[in-house]
Image (tube, rainbow, N blue to C red):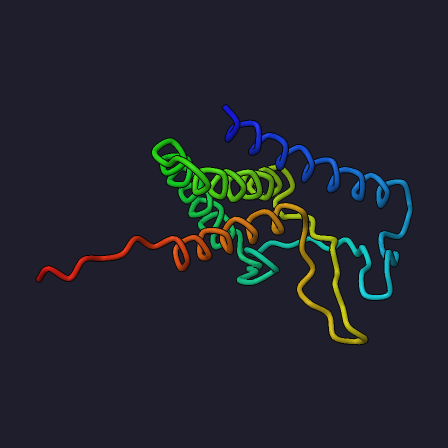
Length: 156
C-alpha cells in the first residue's frame, strides 16, 4: 500500500507543478523566471525521452517510443509486485515519475520540462519533477547493487 501511495504522491506533485506552469503560460505569463542565480523555470515541450534525448519530429517514432515507455512501465509494475524492502520504494519512485511523463506524452503529445540548472552560460538539460524521481530511483538502485551485494561463495 505504501508503494502505491508513493507512486500517487509523486504523480500528483508532478501534475501540480506542470499544470501550474502550463496555466501560467496560458494566462499570458512568460514562463522564464529566475528562482536562484543558477536555477530558473523555463517551459519547453519535450517529445523525446529523459532530458530531451531522442526527440523525433516523425509521429511514428514518437508513438513507437511511447509504446516502449508503456511496456517498460508494465515491466516495472511487475517488478514492483515481486520486490520488497528499499528496492520496492526505489522502483515505486521510478514508476511514479515515469507515469507522470507517460501521462503527458499521451495527453499533450509532449512532456513539459521546466527546471533549468545552469552555471553561467552552461545549461544542463531542462527537466521536470518526474525526471528527478526517475533519476533518484535509478541512482538508488545502482547504489544498492554496488553496496548491498551479498558475498558470493567460492566453493567452485
